Length: 253
Image (cartoon, rainbow, N blue to C red):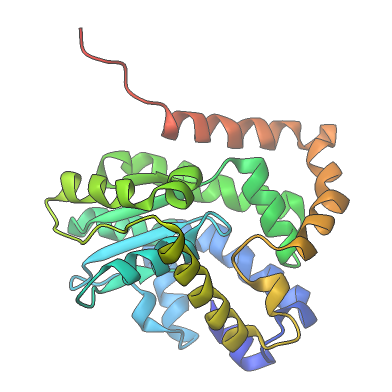
């Protein structure tokens, strides 16, 4: 949600309380389309990200689940502009897309990996990040027949196969991303340009949605929090919903 950044400056880290409140709204209002979009309009946020009846593809997932890579790779592969609703990181987008029968890709990453990466990048606690993860995926689980699921490993390893599944599921004809070194480098270059523009030169490296050595050290420093016994129940729930969503159906006999 960029309106907060626009109001308080590009460095949302300077306002961690504002950021945490924003994530609280996404976690709780994000499950209810009427409430979420009402607040979104009041904040005068970027309406281009919102799903509408004219949207051609919805692409949503918990933060740090290859959202930026998927969007950049998809756009790189297309010869014509596609109207994509993306980047709000709330299940409300998926719910509306399901109601309007709009092709949808939900991105997912193993909960410990996603939560740790998110908590390292932004001023959010592990507990809040876990609850956000649960809110997103336990809500979209109820709409499982309405979208294609893209695992982090699939998106970053062979995104072309994911686009093929979207085409097969929805009867679309989106061009397939060729997952080779040249195209992947081009995607990362695009992500870096966007991050530099959005966050500025001083902090783009920590914010950029790609693996960088500067964040690996921070991951090690905060990783022990996920192993704290008091988080066992939340982690078990998160792993359970991940397993349910990613479980392959048994073959017909």
